[in-house]
Image (cartoon, rainbow, N blue to C red; front, side, top):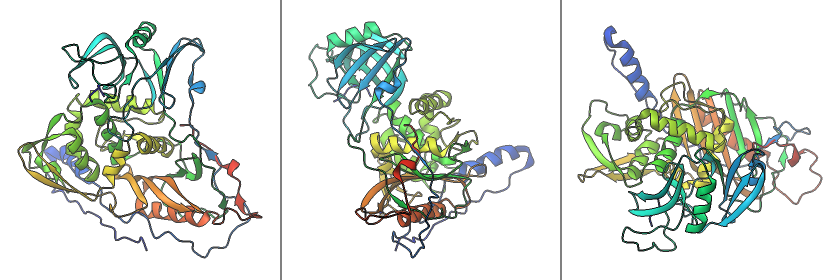
Length: 479
């Protein structure tokens, strides 16, 4: 942004949503309204009690064999043309031309880790250049500013209109350089110049897990994936690279983009009926909330009305454009968004791409996942009206569930992206489970979570485990 200073076996809850039959003259509209309400998903038990069941161990590997790797700067530098790399781990910014580094500058400040203003990482390009941009959010001047995404810029030292410099720690997410350095980068960069923002969260990667070979569990879903978020190892998958509609899982990206391109404190109006679940489409009385507060009904209640209101800030086409830009930045090459709610069957992705999104949210925008696991939240409108938002994703008291999003439409069936903290072997590891095209996404997620727990070697110091899958066999998805 612009600079400014967890036996499981929970009882599932399934909402039966009904819509009155309308006359033939407006049948198409009635069908769309039904889809609009239907996509509001119900809460179910997400993960069962973790424990090792009595299972006969096989002698041959049946696990998938790939891993999801994280890209580094050298792997991204093109051999032709200009390129900028911002290393947020070592706080250095590099200029490249025709594959060769030509300059290096210290990064003075970046967005604070773990906040809504944390600097986004990924692939971008320089969109605008302005010698002295004035931030209407921070009310400060940003010399030699180069916009690379939404409210995020590369720029020099900021100062107030009266000329007073801002404090050294003054940042809302932009990449701040010394002004003279920013001037040089400004002269180098053209509109369209590619930029890779790199931020390594795990400097000492965890070792891949050693697994006992077990038959993969019965999974109803057409496509699924379970992978370790810290090593990238994919332990089980089906059709993980096939494109499918994703329903309200779309709202994870909606929330991410809303945070990145709209000021967190910006006020927006939403229909009062969109703040209840199931929604009351007849209650169109407008209430005004901050964008930050609107993320709660969006993610916890899967409010389509709120999704529409957020889209209205830039216009639906513009906002969805930012969603697709963000998907590209995160290397989600098989993902396309058509709306902010997930109603359209043209919101498509793959389990592999959604793994990338889950990792990014967990590492860079964890507050989004924290919202999705909040059990209840009271939000207050500008007029003082209070609304209690209840979670339809999973109980907040569930320790394994660290965040995620469920969805359902006729075209997509049941979908889910879930980030879980699971006891596997001798350690607790972050696992992402993505399920698409299922008749019961919670059951499938439970089965996969139970399987990885049972398949894990429990005594990591034990030798002679001839039935353990070798860590080098797991495939990795490049992040």
